[in-house]
Amino acid sequence: MMMKRFTITFVLLLLLICNSLLAQDTTVDQESSLAIPTEVVTQDTLIKDVNHSSELNKISDIRSQFEKQNSTYSAPVKPGESLLRFVKKDHAALSEEALYWARFVRDASLRFDDKMTFQDTVIVNPLFMPLLFKGNILPKDLTFYDFSALKSKDPYSRYYKADSVFKDLERVNKIEEIATGYIEKHHPEYFRYSVSDLPKDIIKPKEIIKDPTESLLSVSNEANFNDVSGPGKFIPERRYWKSNFESAIQFSQNHVSANWHKGGSSNLNVFTRNYLRYDYNKDKVQLTNEMELKASFYNAPKDTIHDYKIGDDVFRLHSNLGYKAFNKWFYTFDAEFKTQLFTNYKENSTQQLAALLSPFSVNIGVGMKYELDKAFKDKHKKLKLTVNMAPASFTYLYSIKDNIDLARHGFRDNKRSLSKFGSTLRTDLNYNISRNVNWQSRFYYFTSYDQVVGEFENTLTLAISRFFSTRIYLHLRFDDGVKKKEDIDTYFQMNELLSFGFNYKW
Image 1: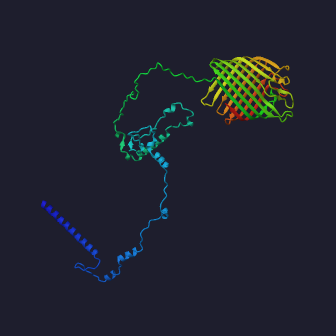
Image 2: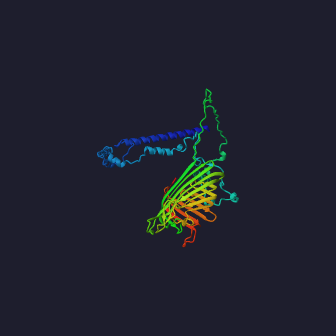
Image 3: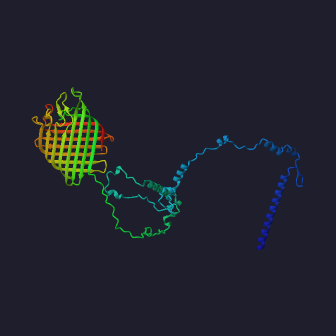
C-alpha cells in the first residue's frame, strides 16, 4: 500500500516538472521573435506568404516619427504672477484674536471654573457611551391614580406655570431618554451591557487627616496684655433732626365757588406752593414744625380796575410738641398760625377782601396724638398718618384792618377780633401709592359747640419725571359762622385746581 502511494506521488512530480520546462521554452521563443525585427530563416520557421514583405516596407520608422513629434516640444515655463492670480484661490485668514477666542470656546476644559478640579475624571455625555440596558420599560410618569386630586389646589395655578432653574439640563436629559427609548424599541440588538454587568465593587475615597495646628504660627515669647488697652467704643452719631422741603411752580386751571371766603373766580392761573418741614425726635420727645406758603395769580379780564387778582393765598405755621405715652400715642400741645400775604380786591371795586394779617387766626390745643408710619414690601410705597385730638382748644381771630369784608371771615358786629373755645381735630395723611403717585390729605375740624369750621384738603400728585408733575387739588370748606349770600344758600365752599409744571423736593 505504501509503495502504491509513493508511485503515484512520483508520477505527479514528473508531470509538474515537464509542464514548467515547456512553459520556459515558449517564453524564450516569444522573446527571441520580438528582439529580432528582421526576417530570420531557421529550420523551425516557415514563411508561407512572401508577398507580405512589400507591405512591411511601407511602415514609417518609429524613430523618425518620434523626432518629428519632439521637434515642436518646448520645456515648460514657470507661470508668472499674472497667471497665478487666476489659479490661486483666496483664503480668509483668521486674526490672532479670533483664533484665541475660537480655541477658548472649543476647549471643553475652560467651561469649568478655575477653582474646580477633576483629577482622574472624564465627564462624558451618557448618550455617547456604550448603551446600557436599565430595564426601565414602563415610563416614569405612568400613574393609574392621581394622589394629589384630594389635596387643595391653588385657584391661580392654571393661569401660570412655575419655571425650572435647570430647564436646559432637563431638556438635554429628555432628549437622551427619547433617544435611548427609541433604540430599546426598534434596535434592542445594539445593547451589549445591562445594569447587572456593572461592577459591584465600591471604591471608597481615602481620608486624609491633617493636623490643624500644622500651619499655626509658633510664639516664642508669651505676650503681656497688661499694658494694652482695648479698642475704643464706636458710637455712630445719631440724627435727631429731619427736614423735608417741597417746591412747585405750575400753570393751572382753577375753579372757585362764588361764595369762597377769600374771593376769586374761575380762570387759568399760575400756582406756587412751598412747604418746609423740620422734625425733632429723641427718646420720648417729638417736635413737628411746618411752614406752608400757597399762592395763585390769575388775570382778570372782567375786572376793569385791577390787571390781576389773587385766587388762593395761604401762609401757615404749625407746631406740635409731643411726649410719648404708650405704643403710638403721644401727649401733645398743638399750635397753628394762619394768614395771607397779599391783598385781594373785590371784582370791579376797591373794597379789600383780605390782606396781610387781615385777618389772621391762632389755634392752640392740648390733647393726644396717634401716629402711624407703615412700610410695605414695595420700597416706594409708604403710608404716614397723624391724628391729633385736642378736647381743650382755643381759637383767636383778629384783623389789623377794619376796611375789609369782616363778615366774610366770620366776624360779628363789625368787630375785628373773635375768640372761641372748643375742641379741635386735625388729621394729616401722606401716602406714596407708587414711585410716581402721591396722595396728601389734611382734615381740620373745630367746633365751639355753637359754630363749626371744617376744612378738607386733598392733593394728588402724578410725577412725570423728577422735576415735572401734574397736580390735582381739591379744597372743601364748611363754615356756618359766615352769612349766606342771596344767590347761594349753602355753607359749603370749594376750591378746585388742576395744574402742570415744575416740581422739586428733598
